[in-house]
Image 1 (cartoon, rainbow, N blue to C red):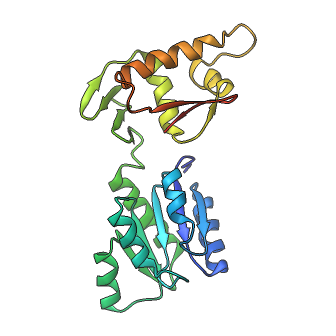
Image 2: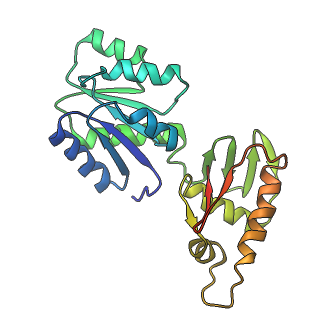
Image 3: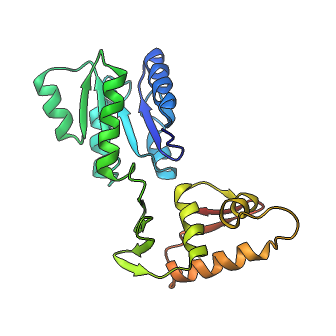
Length: 227
């Protein structure tokens, strides 16, 4: 299983457990970002779009479930699994009331954790290969259909493939060479660089006719990014 663009945040103050979690998740094909406290997590969530957070409750500075409740109050909907030594029934109840999607107690089985992660990501649509979602853009690969805020948008095959590439790599700056090889499947000097700019310009007009959503941003000296 390869989950190149599926990033999971782990907040765990015991370094050995954090390393163990990262090892098993990366082995399963996920990308990971580990934190020993909640200090820089909110800033990370502002800039990135992880598909899941695994959170210990016994953390320095801010207790894990209090942090999640705070994130929920700010509008963050990223699924959360609490992985903690707090195993009383009242702890479990408190965890779900503060925004948990699942709750596991230590010691834990890495295999069981991976199965729970897969179940949550399947429900959230993150593991659904036929359907990609970014902000209010929904792409149905099987139907070859794109909708934005519930409205179907007609795209050419090339435009659809281009947006598909951006959605698979959302919030990442994609170089022109990468787009050329991935979308146009062209190599060498015969390919005209303006082809990419023109196609992206046409795509932007279709998915953002008013120019107020700014899905696709140019990255100077690099390429473009879907944000």
